[in-house]
Length: 300
Image 1 (cartoon, rainbow, N blue to C red):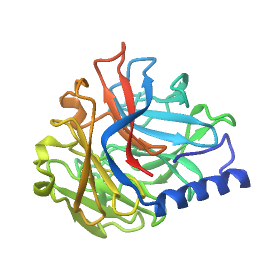
Image 2: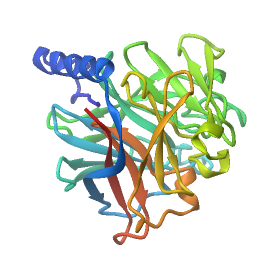
Image 3: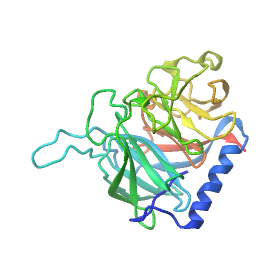
C-alpha cells in the first residue's frame, strides 16, 4: 500500500484515513495460503528498464502502480553529477502505462509509507557495505496531484549499516516502523529500526521444513505482508512457487506459480515486489521488455 502528492507533504484527511484503515485491515487479517497462485494483474513494460526492473508499489488513492528500475550511477565529471539514470514508472490499475521520471537513485525497494504519506525508495548500498557512495539511503519520491512520477525527491535518511548486504531489497512494516532486510545467500532476515545503527533482531527461515535450500530462493528479497501468521513471502525460483513463513521464520505453506512461466537467474535478484495484496514476479520472456505478474497468494 503506497502514496505522495505534488509539492505538499501531507494527504487530504480522507486519503489518510483510507490508508490507515487499509493498513489496519491487512495487519490484523487472518489468511490462508492458496495452493495455486491466482493471477490478479499483468503489467507489460512499455519501455526497456534502465538496468534491471526491481520492485513494485501501489497507491490506492490514485489507483496506480509504481515500478522502480535499478542501476548504478556513472562516474561523476565536471559537467555531470554522479546520479543514477534509473527511472521510476507509473501504471494505472489495469496495467496501462502512465509516465516515467528520473529521481536519480539506484532503487532496490519502492513502497508506500502510511506513516509519512509518501512514496519512498531504498537504494542500493544503503548499508555502505561496499563503501560509502553518494545518493545512498532512503528517499521520498514526489508525485503530481494526479499521481504521475516527478524527477524531484527528498532525503529521509542516509546510509545505515544495520541493513547488512549492499544489495538487499528491504520491505517495510508500517505498524511497527521497522524494515525486514533479506541477506544474500543466507537464511537470515535482519530486522531494522531505522533510528538505530545496528539490527534489532534477526529471523532464521526454516528452509529445511520448506524443502528448499537458499540457492532455490530469491536471494535478497522477502515480502512483508502484515498478515498474522503469514508475514513473510519468498520466491522459490527453482520450483516456481511462493513460500510463506511466519514472523519467527516458521514455514507455513506454499503457493505454486504457473508451470509455463520461464523464470531466469535474474529472478533471484530482481523483478520482485508486494503491493495491493499481490506478489509480483517479473517474467522477462513475455513482451518486448518483459511483464510483471501480480499473484494473489493468500486467501482472505
